[in-house]
Image (cartoon, rainbow, N blue to C red; front, side):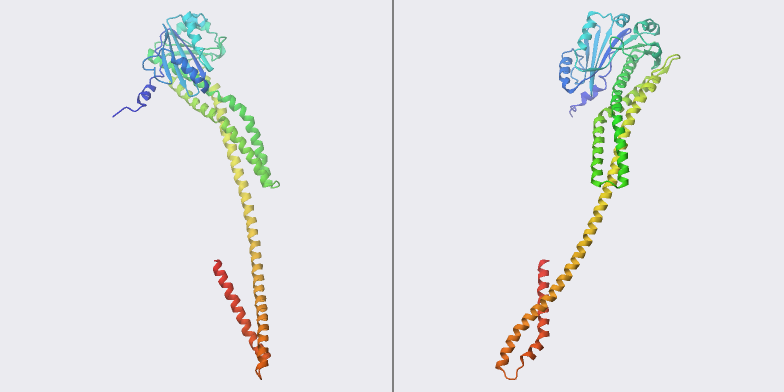
Length: 422
């Protein structure tokens, strides 16, 4: 037996997304980037120059290791972007909150900012040991108290955030372990950060949905007017079909334009729900919880996106049904025209048959007339040679047999011609 070529990669996939164990206190700085396909090679060149852990060096979508003493990194490639996180330990988190960075930290941040892509989310996560340390740090983080979110998650761990961008263009997140085992705490903080990342990516669909909604309104109104005109039967069917085809093409264009973004939004929204469920959020009196914030701000946006998708689907279905009805009416009219044409052809055939029968009768008479005329000349000749022979009487006697003979011959020739044609 030999190993499948993907075995090691599949096994590694189950472990590579884990963050390194967090130290208390420490700071995590993470950027979530939207990276185009044209920028992927430049990104790979930069990441490929970094020192990596032995188990992550060869994986194409994950890489982690040490940038310098006390500063680790973790890079991950996603379907439509990447994320890079710096894990800074052994520093006073209060200095970082005030923007007092050491030279090593400045260099690490400057290096991260050279990565290609557009920033979708940038977060500074301040990790402390307990609530008392967090209370000392809170005043330096410039949280807006009226919108401050705070709750327990995963048991005794606690988080603070107002989900607003600060002057340095970073969002700030404060978390306290409160005795949570370090491995569990690291997983919880990563899930908490994943929730925010997926939330932002899901919300990328909202501007698209808001932009498309007026177009759907216009198409819906045109489709309603067109249905009324189809029912009125005043317009030509081909004119109605042309307009309906145009509306169908418009709906197809809208569907093609929003399909990827709306599908991604639905997938990210499901991941947000999964992460929220895994965090076991517990409300703290006097603060909005992460669950409350998600339900109040996030769910309406996701439902708007879902409503756009559903409306586009229903309009496409209405257009398809109207097109089917119009085609059925056109087909019925064509069938009626064909039936009328067949009746006309049948009547014409009967007339042709009667004319043919008339011509056949006239042809028998004509042929008989000419044949009798020839026989008359022949009999008159015999009358001069034979005494007592009456040619006129003989000709009169031959009229009926001649007519019958001609009729029989014509009928026989006609039958033979028809049998040869078949």
